[in-house]
Length: 159
Image (cartoon, rainbow, N blue to C red; front, side):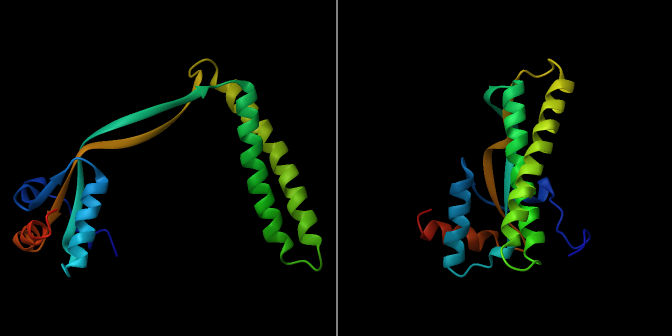
């Protein structure tokens, strides 16, 4: 599917084709599941989140020990995986040694890069966090003239 084939979101057209509005994504997803169970052509539906907000959840302080530990864990996992993949093409139990050595080398490099990234970040950010986008409400929008059919099906299924 090329970019030209993807239907573009038009807020004016969508306002007239809104089937229902939900306060959570799970409720909108349940509505799509219900319509699917009723035989509705769900490829004509969109779930549109509106009024997006960036939520940053603080997970703890950022310090050198945490940066080194996270770097070592990530590097060790990646190195172990790469060692396993390369070891699959060798005879006997050589794969086990390659996986362990890959994990050790990856953990060492990961710890070094974790320390360096924390040292160069300076005091700009003294905490660790995760970020995500959250919408305040979700509109279920129907395309292709299926709006009324979707509304009737949802009303009949008490959703």
